[in-house]
Image (cartoon, rainbow, N blue to C red; front, side, top):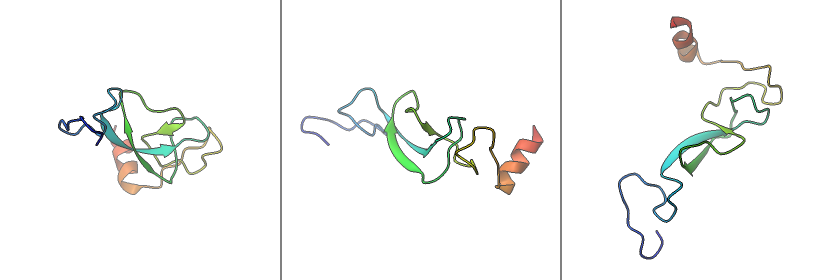
Length: 81
């Protein structure tokens, strides 16, 4: 923590008012809104940084037309809607 900064709750960077929480993010190389590993844990604000996604299950992150879900639990959740 920087000199003079104070810690407030879960704020991940008290020295920068534009960021306030940690998020698990995945690089989204094809820009389809779904990324792929490796995951990153970053301190972010209200908007996602460009090129990153909260979802990380894109089987082919070089083709925006391909988003595959190989997670059985997630498949069940999606089928229930």
